Image (cartoon, rainbow, N blue to C red):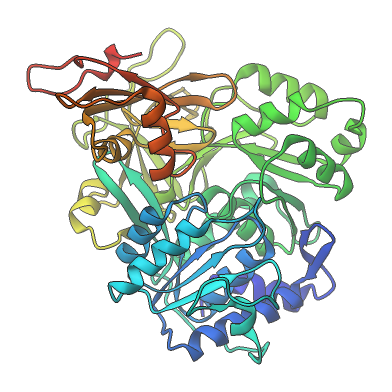
Length: 527
């Protein structure tokens, strides 16, 4: 058996007294989490879910996420984690595209709710004959379902046995489908094998010195529906019998308090989180205690400012390790290795078992490695090969063939350079991609939604610098003849149509957009 759920099962057997998850005053041991996951697996089997079926999950960083995640895997099914900020229309698309047979959606308290629109998205799919089973995760497991015709997770688990014989799967069976937006339309589902996810999590030994004999305590502020938090934090912790301290929504002061209270040894975040932590330090924070416990700090998602690097190391005595990866690479492809020193601005070297090279953005040929006076290679598109590469994009053979060649190299769409020692540096992200607060936002998807506005004729979306988010989303709109709409109206409309991290906060109404001779918008001339 090679099921990814072995991380949980092995730790439950080997470390029955260890705490697996901390959330508020709730502390769950590994056997407790394993028993609950077994109940989820029994629930799914009782509803006819078979090995290979897809089961979607919308849930913030709560114990429910991990329990359901491993329960789905135990049943031999495939987990489809969904961004909790998605609107109903977006949820409906993901459920339909993934062929999800069941959907777990958290409702909970107002500050953590996915919202009624997410549930409306399920209803839309159900009317089309798609998703068959819908489970509402409520903060109170005894409460009745808030949606007519559905059942709560608590109702579903009632009477389910806490034991289950985990389904044996093949190394190459799909464990998780992670949805990633593309520059050419709707989000695509990256199929990640059990071995992809397993080997990426186990890389923690080489990268971070992970050791089951000295388990780490991880602060989980990165969303678990995202590949970074899912692999590096959740699966990385469970692989070595560590403890995951969950924080559903990042708030710097709360994060600092938990780091001190729970003696956190491992912190992972995007640059804006580090920026927030430093900004929240005051006399109420026991910096000395925090620094004495913290062993590893890792960052990804976008480049970490030099000033943040230096200040964090000064205050906490820990050097932030930067890494790089994508949903398609499970996600880690390269990292600055613990103990090797850090080259600020670098994403490190390929992790064990992974290769990287620079190729011509217009083809697959490796570029000339000529170096500039600083010792860096010429700029090329980063290509990746190894145990972490996805199986492909679900139901999209053409897109898969464009992304992965016959030799197994995956083209990232990111431009980079390499120094003489093999350390890589990101020069630019995919041509148009925006990184807002650690979330990838693809202009094409936003533009297509804006074009459904009754007054908008043409739209172009770019990222503009923002102090705390890194980038903010700005849209330029040409209105239809005779139509009228103010920037404020379009912003408000976009907020209703798109997830909170996607919709443009800045809209500029223009008469024309700069174009090439072939009719392509020259975004480099927009600001």
